Amino acid sequence: MLRKFRRLSGMPPYLFIATLALAALSGLLNIMPIQGVGALVDCLAGSSATQQGLTRMWLDITGRDKPYLVLLSVIIVYVVSGAVSNLYGYSSTLLGMKLAHNCRMEGARAIHQCSLRELESRPSGDVLTTLTSDVDSVQRAVTAPLIGFVVGVFELMWVLALFLYWNWAIGLGILLLTLPLYYLTRWYNNATERLTRLDRTQNGILTSMLQESLWAAAMFRIFDRRGYQFGRIRKTCEARFAIQKSQSRLAGVYWLSVRALQALGLSFALGLTIYGVLHGSLSPGNVLIAWSYLQRFYAPVLELSRFGNMIRQGLVALERVEQVKNMAQSCDVRGIKLVPDAAGQRRVKIHGVTFAYKEENVLKGVSFDIPFGQAVAVVGASGEGKSTLAKILLGLYAPKTGVVGIEGFGDEMDGRPSVAAVFQEPMLVSGTVAENILLGEDLDEKRLDEVISLVDPDLIAELPEGLETDVGERGNKLSIGQQQRIALMRALYRRPGILVADEPTSALDGHAEQRVLAALRAAKERSTVVLFSHRLSTVKFADHVLVLRDGVIREAGSPAELLERDGEFARLFASEAGKSRT
Image 1 (tube, rainbow, N blue to C red):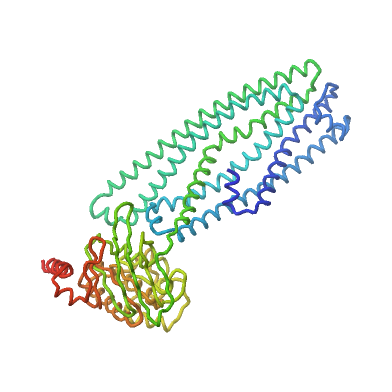
Image 2 (tube, rainbow, N blue to C red):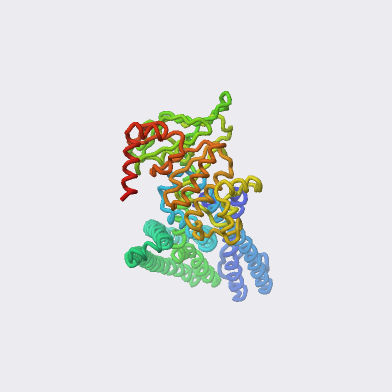
């Protein structure tokens, strides 16, 4: 457990070892004043009974008839103990903060590095819960209960060693009582961990539902299904409440059991101590020492019963954080193979590409060749794999077999910045219009003006603050048409060798669609344009059309040629024309 915390915290090993050393020293210093107080009692009582070794050593150093020196030594030990405890507390708090910081950074890095398929397979609410509330649970577990528990464990070991040194019978009896405590604590940990894991899972589901309630608020109102969604949320909340009640009952049973064992241990140890005092083998101060030691002995167990749920939540949360962190290991090897400029030719070559979702083959051997400066449209009915092929071309998915070759567009390891894209969903981020177009790239005002003029020079003028207009969360302050044109500006600003457009006009009105298509047509002068669409009216400007059906290319040719063949493309076109007339 501690090794896992150390690894995720990023703290150097020597600092982590120093923190543990401070915990051990703090545990020892926490119990040393007990010895001093016991020595002070014997000094004041003038007891001549047998004193245990450490008490006798303490009185030999300070003087048996100098109670003020004994008291001063106790005060000094208290001050030193407080200083070491504060130093350990600072070190442990720093450990918790570094752990939380590194968990968030590693999780965020994993989200940006993992394969798109891995990211799409996880509920977004669950990932967000992991990187927010789960990380907070880890930090809380480290900075409060775990700190006390670790120090308590060291105190337990010191007390047990002192008991065995002082009186082997008492020490052995206390040691035997630790066995039922161990098995009881083990049972409690296992049961609590299972319940905590269920609770965190339900929390992730609840977060996802609340997200849905926010972004789909209009839909729930239009269809009058707010009660339905609220009912789903209520069931999840009730499930969490039932789990938390079980955790509370479990903690109550554990607490009572620990208290019963503690009472048994105290009775046994104090009985032997009092027997020794009555028979002159132990001093009165030994009774105080024994009682105080026993309180310290059970401290870590009581700490676990008090904060056990928080510690288990931290451990389960740590596992969930590691699961998100391990997403980075699922990075797809990009399907793009970069080829040096071959005799000045620049082209995209796809050969024998196959792809499957689980056991279902979506692409079954797609091959085509696109020269530079052409606009190629890939058409087909919904569900034929157009978006999948687009993601493979962009390097977001790796093909099962086959090669995606890009010739003459540069030697970047991942094909960037030769490739840019516009999707059906514009994917704007919080910030200004300018920030969404640049997306972190350096500003080139001439290039930016060219892109704006190419796509829609009136768009920026229409916005209240021009390029500095805030687009809102996911662009919700702009219309869909405005969002899509800004997304196209973002793609063209990179002057890509290849521009992929996946259903870029499916949600646009006629005017906005013509604006976007005009910009794509103009982009052919400096880019290869690959358009994926099921709306055949948007592909008329294409030089070449590929008809995708059943995972393979069924037809290829210019739009006019394919219409004359009266094949698959012509049937799709006629079907769409019939729908538009009706």
